[in-house]
Each structure stands twice: as C-alpha cells, then as structure tokens.
Length: 82
Image (cartoon, rainbow, N blue to C red; front, side, top):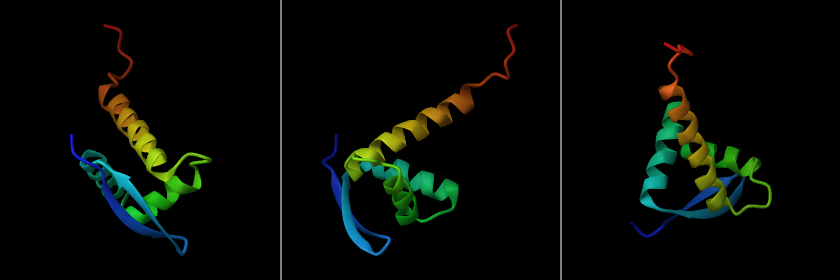
C-alpha cells in the first residue's frame, strides 16, 4: 500500500488540500475524465455534499459509491431469470 499523496486545489476561490493514496487519485482522475470535468471541479462537487466529513474522507467515500455504481451497471443482466 502506498502512502497518501497530498495535493492542493482551489475550490470556489479557497485553497485546500487533500491526501489520498495513489489508487484513490487514479480512480478520481478516471471519474473526472469520464464526466469530462476537471479534477478540481469534481472535488468541488464532492465538497458541496460532504456535510461534516473531512474532504479526504468524503472523496474516498464518493469513490467507493462510484465504483459500486459502476459495478452494479456492468453486472446487470437485463432482469432475465432463465
């Protein structure tokens, strides 16, 4: 397992930083590319809905939900019961 890597961003004019392990950074970059938005824009979107959670934790949880949603879509068999 890799150590967390800290990166800084501007979110609505406010500088902030988050620390994530390499695998989380890669998943976040993939999600931003899939949605055709910048990494900073995706993090800002996550920030808007995080509530009281820390931003790094909120990003990890968002990635978990994103990966689970993608897995559910790819495993859907069309509802056939044959």
